[in-house]
Structures are given as structure tokens and as C-alpha cells.
Image (cartoon, rainbow, N blue to C red; front, side):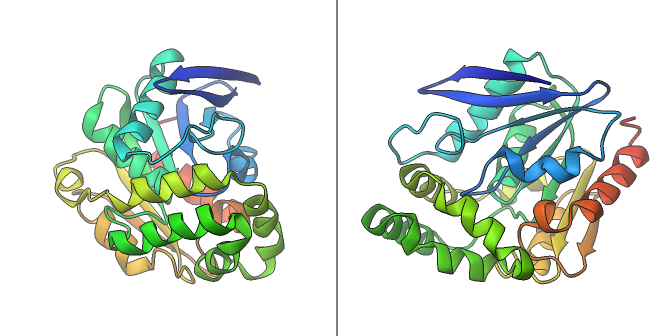
Length: 256
């Protein structure tokens, strides 16, 4: 296992690179960091797994916002170019799935397939995201955590996720909310032609299954599966199910 500090425009990004084999790149959700993938990656011994912290999150730099989705996509591009990653399957949770879609549109030389977990081409209307950004800038992370846990609907794992949100950078969280607010990928994602897997917990209140299915269906030939009993952060709460579905998908597209 190797760690990297990778220079992107306006920020140094933390990345972790482990294993050998066909490459997978993992991008996490709003408010948490690369560690959400621990339980999934532990079940992928025959792959090179690269995961990183979004700007404003974890061990990456926290420049002042607002951020744009284009910047978050360029960050993923910088990770892949610096580590010379090509023909990867990009796995994104929530905002990480937006990054996956944008990078696939921009750089098909990098992305040969994508897995969208609890993600959509558009995550609601802009106003609630701007309101969340203001709430966090005014009151810090404690002001937003109850709403996030309710939307994530993680149930028995709420304490673990609350701990992660408590450690989050308020400005990074707010600035990423602003990036999500300005993003609508329905048209570009509908033009993609690459292997795509959509996954969603049936209890997810943040990105309900029908929304995730709608986005997945934009890509012809895509696959979609529900994760029973899971909310929004299924890679943490249902790592076994996510890993099993991911391995089936990787085998079906020959990424082995």
C-alpha cells in the first residue's frame, strides 16, 4: 500500500494505492472520506484499488469555496494522470458518482466502466444545496448532521457515520454542496456508451432508488440492483453486498 499527495489545481489531494491487477478508482460521498471503502476493498484482493479524498475532505486540502463540479472532475483526472491510470472502472458514491459521470464524458481513455452507488445525473434542485452550505458556514457541522443522518437512513450504523461527519471540514462540505447544486448531467450521461452498474439501498432517502435507476437507464445496456436493507452509505453499512455486486459486474465486462 502506497499513499500519495497529488497536486491538482489549487489543492493537494490525498490518495491511497493498494493491490495489483485491473484498476478500480473509488470516489466517496459528501462529508466523509476514502475510508468508507475499507470494507469493500478488503474483498477485492485481485485488483489495484486507488481511492482518494475529495478536495475539502479528509486529508486533502480545503481551499475556500465554492467548488465547481468541473473542478472535482479535474481533480479525479489529476489523480489518474499522475498515477498513469488508464482503462479503469470508476466507482463513485453519491457526489463521487457525479464525478464518475463527468470524468467518463471527458476522458474515455481513463474510464472503461463505471459503478454509480446512490448517485444520479442531478441531485435535486439547487436551492436546498445552497441552503445546506449556508447552514454549515453559519453553524458548523453540528448544524447539519441530524438532517444528513435522516436522509442517509443508516439506522444501526448512524453513530459511526455521525462520528465521520463530526470530523468533516465545514468549508469543504459547504463548497461541495455548491458544486452539487450546479450540476445536471442528464444530457451528457445519456450520451455515454460504456459498461455501467447502478446500485442503491432500498431505504435511501437521499437518492431514492427510482432516481438512481433513472440515471443508470440513461446508459444503454446498463445494470441496476437494489441493496436490501441499505440506506445511502451502503459501502459502509452493506460492504459485503456492494463487493459482491461489484465483482459480478467486473466479471461480466471482463475487467478481471
